[in-house]
Image 1 (tube, rainbow, N blue to C red):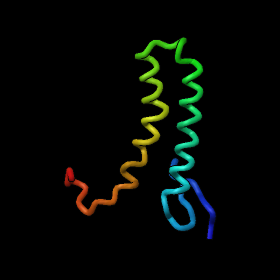
Image 2 (cartoon, rainbow, N blue to C red):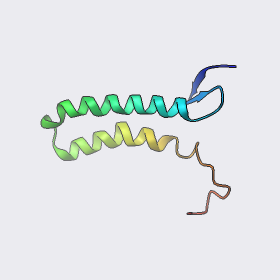
Image 3 (cartoon, helix red, strand yellow):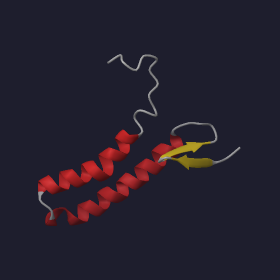
Length: 77
């Protein structure tokens, strides 16, 4: 059995849990946020929000459809 493998930005572990993916996603997002925290005084708020959306929020949203577990994907519940 494999320890972990990545495919299209999603990290799978041998037990097919989300632990490896969440750990990798957290590590990458924290790196971006720490880097931006050092440059926040040089960037206007609008630009900073755009960068966070592009580099952090987009990574989180990317896997939401992969992790969808509801039986009826059209149900808003």
